[in-house]
Length: 105
Image (cartoon, rainbow, N blue to C red; front, side):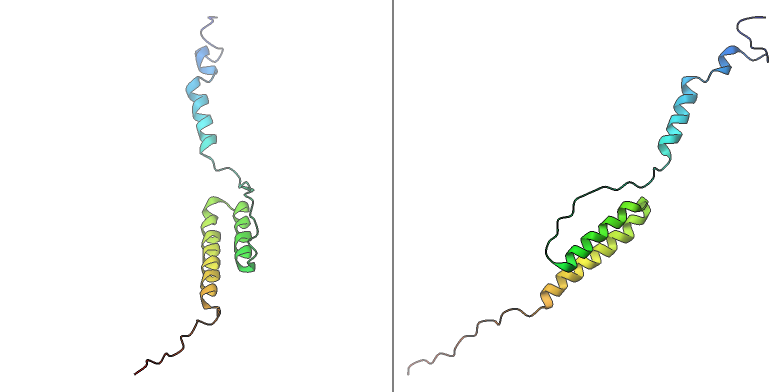
């Protein structure tokens, strides 16, 4: 038998995967989505319960695939917008009034 031919009759080179085959299988693994991983971004409490609740909701995105993040982000955005709107609606201190002045005649 010849060294260049295997017992099945195929060349010996075909039995060992070449660099192209290895590169193709590696790129297939890179294209597969990985499992969700927590970002562990620290969230410092603001002291405003509505804002803090909205920011805590961001942690839910850590357990979702990327395509699920938009729902969480929209919910947080809505909560923060509502908190800001509530600040405008709260009565503040009364506006200073001007006393009518009389002009001498």
